[in-house]
Amino acid sequence: MTVEREEQEYAAKTGRSRVLYEEALAVMPGGNSRTTTFFDPYPFYIQRGQGAHVEDADGNVRLDLNGNYTSLILGHAPPEVVKAAQEAAAHGLSFPGPTEHEIRLAELLTQRIPSVERVRFTNSGTEATMNAVRLARAFTGRPKIAKFEGAFHGTHDWVMVSVTPDPKAAGGRQRPKPIPWSAGLPPAVAKHVVVLPWNDAEADEVISFRVAPGGAQERFGARPDLTTLGKIIGGGLPVGAFGGRRDIMDFYDPRRGGARISQGGTFNANPVTMAAGVATMNALTPDAYARLDALGERLRGGVTRLLEATRRKGHVTGVGSLFCLHWTTAPITDYRSTRPKDPDAPMRVFLGLLNEGILLTQRGMGAISLAMTEEDIDRFVNALARVLARG
Ligand SMILES: Cc1ncc(COP(=O)(O)O)c(C=O)c1O
Image 1 (cartoon, helix red, strand yellow):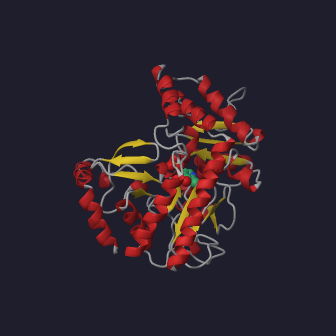
Image 2 (cartoon, helix red, strand yellow):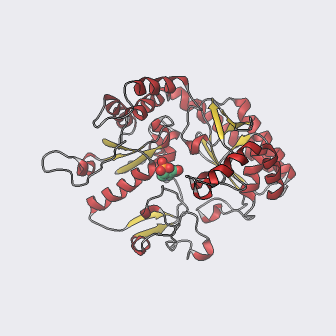
């Protein structure tokens, strides 16, 4: 099926979302506050989420393998996290000072990630990477930063470079040219960001922290000086964190002569997020990771067998509860090798899966939650088979 046919089928199922979208257009550019979640013809409006599923404004229920872009490792509205957030909220939503919840989440993170000797909280992964870049510059005294081609690290100037560049405009494979990802970036950004091709395990913990109790750095044996975190550590509420070596993090120590780097933030480490984060971390036991790994293996195995059986040009990659579909035949070795041969393929599959009752991300990345069962994983593989069969 073409993208247009999938769009027609989607539109037929989402009439109420279309009405809401039109209302949104009157008050927001493109009806939207979050560029990454927009897709043509319009996004569906979510009414509620429970466990492994989300329900939209038209009553369509979909298996959610997007998980708010990998944040919801326990699924939607897990009772223990909702309870912790409600209890914290009942005592006050935010304060002009620290709470004990912040210490408890910091303890859990520093215990789980040995390289993170000290940590500070933010409201988003964007703020976490912004602070990590500033801190790295302050500590090394060097202005340039390196960033991997094709990697997203949020929406502050220094990382909005070469996120989805067209290889034709982006120079040689080994020495990619920095390509601004947005209007409004100052020329200094391209001058001070060195773009590298990624190859193997890149410890980028905003997403990959979910692959083991100590994150990807535990799984791949890395000990970085600084780590940025986000997504799952807030239990579904807005969050970010950055941490690392104590002597480096001391740039933020406000005692005595004052901090060398100031990090304010009205809602940093707010008690509701911190309490939800603690409840989530406590639910992530070794058994929980083993279950996520097993579901991930089942999914990747099922998709690989499907692609082989149907001779489709594709791969599935991933580790633990994370996976990504790639519509190419070439082995995946760097950003450029992930670019689909047929540029419509990711959107056709995304919309096709929506029509089959499955929510993924537009680019084909997905995340398994603990609310899922083996039957859910098989449902995804079978739905993908039907989408590919009509393409
Ligand atoms: C690797 C990475 N870094 C940073 C971010 C930005 O986090 P946030 O969306 O919380 O600002 C993301 C979000 O998807 C991410 O995947």
